[in-house]
Image (tube, rainbow, N blue to C red; front, top):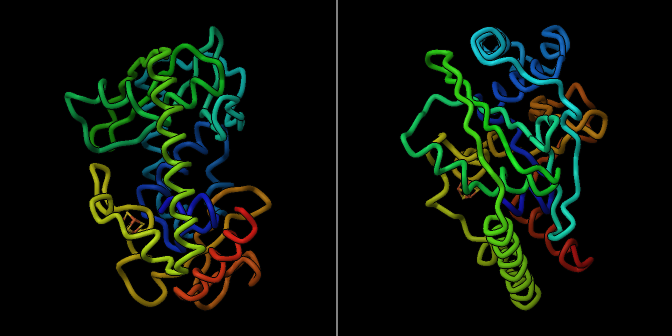
Length: 260
Ligand code: SF4
């Protein structure tokens, strides 16, 4: 998943419904109109009523949102080669991350407290606190968990990224020697289905036919375009990617040759 998403920038042609729902919910919170979201595609139009219900649950039942100082602003983290995009930056060095879920756990506090995405958002925005702002898809209840930054968490994240880079370099070295991409990026079967459902790339890895199609993000708005099908796309044929394992290998080797 990491290789397809972050190195090659390819996304499944048919994202999981919960991800489309999450994107529509975030868009409503960013102030996009339902009409605009519906025009992003049939998948978005389908989830829009549910996204609107969640949006109402959050804005009508949840605590008021302070005025944002920035929304969805991409920030570079200086200590590690990563960028991060908090949903909102708020006064007093606070960032906020909106989540939709149907699964709650007594360990949610502990889970989010050491979540790399959350720690990265605080680091990128130089924030001391992140509010993980959750709406439950089953009953519309909202929960706000407060995660605080610490030097230990920052160091742990930096070490994790350093470790990933080292691992990637070892794998790329093996790729140059062996040329066998599947051996270098094996399927991580323990991550195919998790607490929140199937991996974004599940159909790519485990299905056949059109479900294996991948696509690139639109250069126009950077959003997912779940429009690519074997028949074509409303966004232009140049955005369509129908990759065989051999194509992936060729692209990967080119990326490797160019030093990524
Ligand atoms: S479905 Fe499994 S093997 Fe495929 S990208 Fe996701 S985690 Fe990796």
